[in-house]
Image (cartoon, rainbow, N blue to C red; front, side):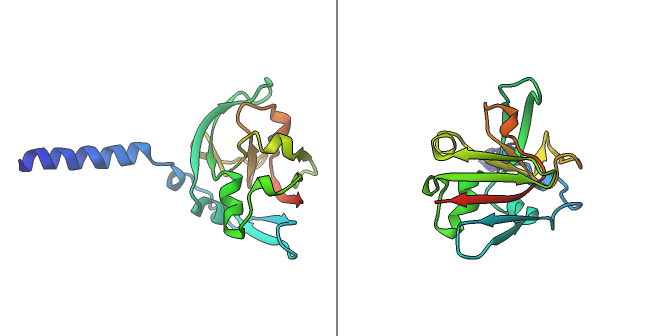
Length: 160
């Protein structure tokens, strides 16, 4: 009986280790304090850091863009609704959003698009920290054109 319990315990620990999100393995130390401005949720801008994102309920998902520019990635980060939940809103509460990168690239999405798709704020790709071309955060929309996958995110503006 003790041997069976021991085996069960070892298997449970191994399963938990293999099924974990993997966020503890991604070293974001070089950009953990970088900020993303969330505008339009409240009267004041909300500032979150990449460390804040990593502390949220995250998911690691393997997806492919529909264009040939990026290919298959394994992205790690929270879903946008997870980020919005502490403020009592979801993406469905907005009619538009604009995601901007520090490279001055932005993507404007309407509610009919973003309510039909999951949007993830990835702080890691393929189990590794983002490189300088993508850090501190990259938008990942599974099975969509990579033109929507804004990198270097520094602001998300929401319109009701």
